Amino acid sequence: MFSRAFDEITIFKNKFKEFCENNNIKDILKYQTIHNDRTEESIDKFITTYIYTNMKQEQVNRVLCQYGITNAMALFHDFHVIGMRCTRRDVCELIEDPSLKVDYQMVELILLDAIGFHNNWRNNTL
Image (cartoon, rainbow, N blue to C red):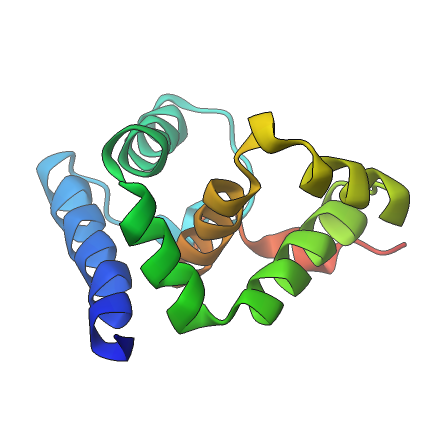
């Protein structure tokens, strides 16, 4: 199972690389921070569609198993507490709401990290 989960991340990275090549996006590191431009909007749409429309639950589960559910929950927690400045209570409420698809949100954070897109939130100071 480990290799298949790794494959999900690799498949995403390859599809993202192809997307960037097809759209003449050369400097993805530029988008570690938010720029609010058309290129960023295009990248965001690609990622959102890929994860929330195209990924099946079994693919999400494989990514979470490979990354580790504890690591995924810690990433989710840190993103919301450090990056979004939510309270720990807010994070618990997010996790408890089944309509929010928290497992997909965790996968989104994992894949964003894998490609280096919008991942400088860790630099926020509390």
